[in-house]
Image (cartoon, rainbow, N blue to C red; front, side):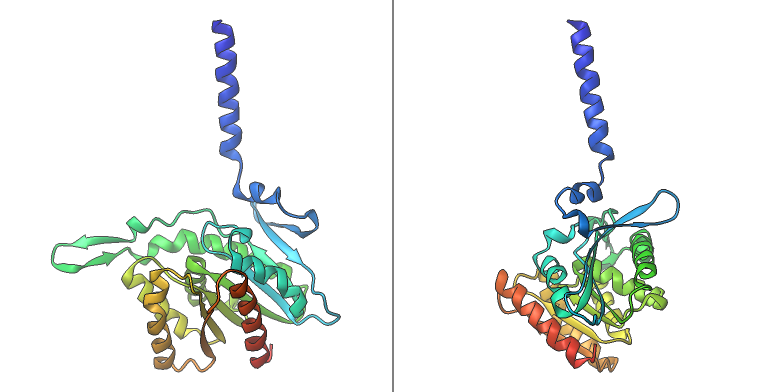
Length: 266
């Protein structure tokens, strides 16, 4: 009986180990058509999962890169998933990236101050590992995009959008031709205001979209983002609300993207 128990325990430990090493990339791969899966090989043993769909027109406009909110995969975000699916019909090479796995813990983004009613935000160095991991993926993807002529447009959601803005401030050489942010936020008051200011300081066309179901961090900073765009004379900034929900919001987003990109000459 002891022998059977030992065998059972060993089997459980092996199963636990196999679960521990499974990555979100491997989990996502199971649900995707094989022809859409692209592994971006990086330094060492690192590799990043990217999805790709070819343009459905005879002359492609360029590449559209869609990235969902932090720690979500592209199929978990209705707006990002729809953007990835319809971009080929709009004339784009459609790419989608899985964000890095590093956690962003909201309870670590601030600490109380005895001398003030306002909490102290975490030092910006907290985000360096996250920004670096995002930069690795986008740098590697840019190498891939070098083989595809045309414009480069990013469509980025949530906290990933906020970190993408910080990344572009640090590394302007990664700057796309246009940036679309969807429900951008950081879950801390001063940090959220700071990234709104940084968005306005980017010298490229920006489409700032917020959805009907956006959280309070997004809703409370939308006016601030618009005001900063005026303060910094960001002439190619546009803010739009998606009035619908569900499939209506997806269709509205696709229509808004198509019209805005055409207006920008992209």
